[in-house]
Length: 238
Image 1 (cartoon, rainbow, N blue to C red):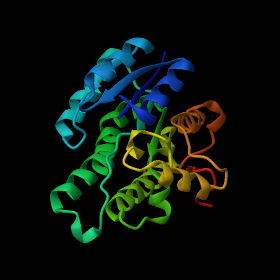
Image 2 (image 1 turned 90 degrees about the horizontal axis):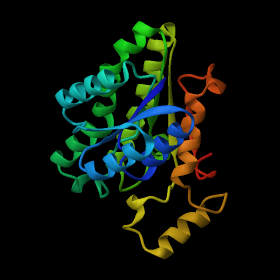
Image 3 (image 1 turned 120 degrees about the vertical axis):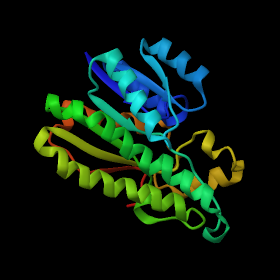
C-alpha cells in the first residue's frame, strides 16, 4: 500500500494534491487545522483518513504523525503544503504575526519531516515534497516575511535532500506562481486579469497544475531527482 500525508489538504492546492495522489493509488491522510468538516468529507471520498493539528505546535505534529503511522503502518510520502500568508510592509507586520507565519510555514514543515523521517530511514525509502513559492525564489515587495519563509523552505529542501539521500529518501520542492485559490479572493477582477497578463503563458495557474508537479516528484519517473526546486509559474519567474 502506497501512503501519503498531505498537510493543509482541506482546500485549494492541498485538496488537489490529495485527490491526485489518491488517483494514483495512494491512501491519503488529509491534514487540516481548522477545516475539519472539509477534511473529513475529502478523506471519506478518497477512502483515506482525516487528521487535525496546529502545525505551529510540535507536540500536535508528533501526535498526528503517530496517528497516521498507526493507521497506515508507514508513510511513503509527506507533502508539506500547509501555509499561511501575511501581506503588508515589513515595518507594519507585528512580531506575533511573524512568529505564526514562520511557525506554520517553516517550523511546521521541519517538524513534520522530523516526525516521519525515522520510519522512512528504517525502511530506506520515502519522498518529501515541500510547497514553497516563486516569491521564495525572487522575493516580493509587501510580502517580505512570506518570501523569507518560503525561501527558508527551499534551503530546508536542499539541505535535507543531502542529509537523507544515503537513506534512499528524496526531498524536493515545488514553487508555485500565481494560483487561482481562495487566497486570491482579496484581489478584484482587474488585478487578477493583470496577473494573468503578466504571466507569459497568459493565465493563472490552477491547483491541479501544482498537484501534477507534486505527483511527478513522488513517482518513479523522478527516482533520480532530489534537492530540486520545480517552478510551476507559467513563466512568471524564469
